[in-house]
Length: 250
Image 1 (cartoon, rainbow, N blue to C red):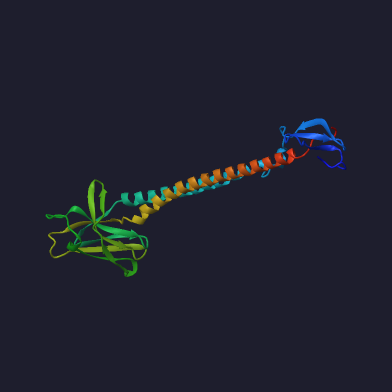
Image 2: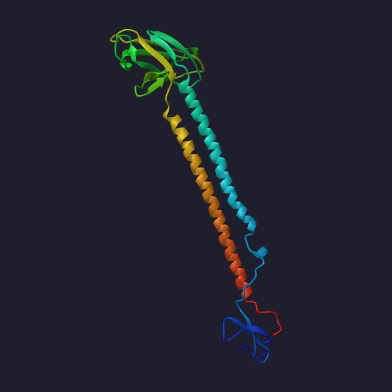
C-alpha cells in the first residue's frame, strides 16, 4: 500500500498484477483500470527504422554483379579456348619446316596423325628431332608431351612436343625424322592444351555461383537481423508503455 503521504494517482493494484487501482491520497478506491490492455506503439520510435530493410538488398545486388562479371569472364575465356582449338592447323612434313605467327609466351604443340608416318604406324617423340626459333633468332625449348589427343576436321591428332613462343612475331619450327623412323612424317602445329585454361573457366563458374549464394545469404541475414532488432525495440516500447499508469482522474 502506498504511504499515506503518497499523492493521489494510479498505482499497481495490490490484489492483482493485471490492474491499476486508484489511490485517493488516503486509501484505495474501487476504481481500477486494465494494466495490460493492448498498447499502440509509435512506429516511428522503433529502431532501426523500416528503411534498414533496404540494406538487405545491398549484399544481394553485389553478389549478382560479381556473378555477372565472373560469368562474362568465363564465357570470354571459353570462347577464346574454342577459337584456339578450332583455328586451322599449320601442316608440314618432316624433314621440313613451317612458320607460324605467335604472341610472345603463346603455347603451341607439334602434333602428328595416328598414321603420321607414310607406310608405318603412328610415330612418337623418339622418332622426331625438332628445333624452334622465334623472332631475332631466339630459340625455344621443347618438352615431350604425348598425352593430348585433338580431333580437328575429322582427323585425329596426337601431341608429340610442346613449346612456347620466345618472342612475338614469326616462329619457325624445323623437324627431321630420327634415323629409325621410316619415311617422312606428317606433322601439324596447333594450340597447346592448358589445364589452367579449363581450370580458370571452372573456377569462374564456381565463383559466380558462390557470389550468388553468398550475396543472397548475407541479404537474408541482414533482413533477419533488422527484423529481430525491430521486434526487440517494439517489445521494449510496449513494456515501457505498460508500466505507465492511466491518466490521472480516477
